[in-house]
Amino acid sequence: MGWLSSTQQGLFTMADDLEQQPQGWLSSWLPAWRPTSMSQLKNVEARILQCLQNKFLARYVSLPNQNKIWTVTVSPELKDRTPLVMVHGFGGGVGLWILNMDSLSARRTVHTFDLLGFGRSSRPTFPRDPEGAEDEFVISIETWRETMGIPNMILLGHSLGGFLATSYSIKYPERVKHLILVDPWGFPLRPTDPSEIRAPPTWLKAVASVLGRSNPLAVLRVAGPWGPGLVQRFRPDFKRKFADFFEDDTISEYIYHCNAQNPSGETAFKAMMESFGWARRPMLERIHLIRKDVPITMIYGANTWIDTSTGKKVKLQRPDSYVQDLEIEGASHHVYADQPHIFNAMVEEICDSVD
Image (cartoon, rainbow, N blue to C red; front, side):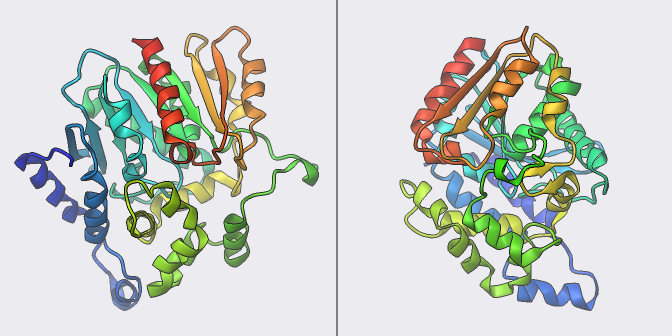
């Protein structure tokens, strides 16, 4: 069971501070139609974090602009090594790292947080242009780092988190000892030849066909009481991925409650994407801007729908820099959950190369 002091229990109750208040008759009616709340998200996340064996601290980090970033720090007592900071992907949250946090925090502190606009963090209104939305994310990460007092870090990002971690490394290279990109979204330019596009997973095509130009996960909110069932129907694989920890629908519930709230970060992601698999501002066009002395490791699932040739292209763009391109067999896009033992060992080795 995870370690939780009385102070931390108090910090957990702070989640109620971010409960969204309905405004107007339509907003008052929607919560009853949509069976979710920040309190429910807090409760299901607490069930997940109870699986942690190492000491951990969970709390809100308040930024100067009044936004709050929900943060979970594992092994905070290990101060001799560079901390690992893990940034989740689209629609995710700190709870999805549960298969990794104990292992990766055995010899160093691990920080995970809910991106601004996702999970239990504040859900502000983002700029509607792709550059403005991206900058808002990156500034929030840097302000979070300053507030946390982290001088530098090993920065790991999955999917959208990989895109944002790269953008962060362009602006703040002095803070990044090693950049680890796990199946990163938004790198390649969209091919003009349709035959060059990898087929997206079935669930993604189904959601896209239903939603058209709506926010990517609007179907969960529109579906009301049927929303939790949709997560289980479209993503039954998540239950299998976390079966060693949960035999019930805990992970499906967590994903639902993360994404049935006000679509703040989701709207920002929509502004940044051309279509679900492509970014309006592809990162391959900018990866050369990262300072040459920042080492980069890219980890892909062998069965992912993401374009894995990106790793080789990054190597070509950074001939005088360290770029490693790795692939994990038997893993798809969610590499960290598909093959957690191999993934953890790989990341630990990278971290040990730093200190």
